[in-house]
Length: 290
Image (cartoon, rainbow, N blue to C red; front, top):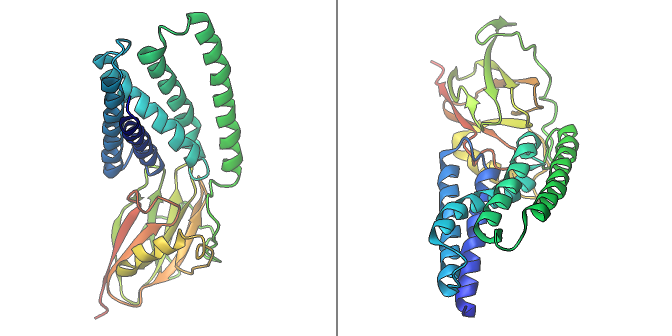
């Protein structure tokens, strides 16, 4: 195989794995864009594998193997690498994504390339030893990051994390303040993702986290929200407080009181890395005070 071909094939395969891993990091099972990203990754991987196969036709590989097991291999490797990166942000999901990716990649590589090179008994020993190690390591990592609240970055949002009673219902009066209840979970969605408020009206926003990952909900002018979330993800600016954001641990409820000083479209966003980009956004329509 020529060096140029080998290099391009390697780029395509590893780019494909990176695309699939990125899809896992940004909500593979919930976000349409992530499915597209994963699809592009699979195609890139297959292109690289096809280049290798065409440049070195030794008869040991078949096109059927490339198309069938190549897809499984790209997904497995993407799951494995993406899940490893995702442990700090979503330990609950990575706990099963990493082992699943390992076994998918193992099976695909064996069926496409290893059947003629390793006997069943050594394969079983290898699978058992490495599989147990991967599962045990995943359990330890999930436990460690779970105790830290799944927090993969370092910033604080001040005193707006006071817990509110989970029994408070949306719209029920409490000291003259209207309650609005939203739910967040690991599907990277805010439910409801759109609600209304009145300019100058105090609203108690109650955020219920039904997932296994930490979420942080920020409310601000829609035109400024995207740039602010991006700046929060930059190491140099990632540590500062807000009085318009709330941090919610897995299975917990938290609340903040907001008063919208201007009418128009306001936005909601989760500040955890990758969550906003994965679609964890919402809109508050604020009507003018007449």
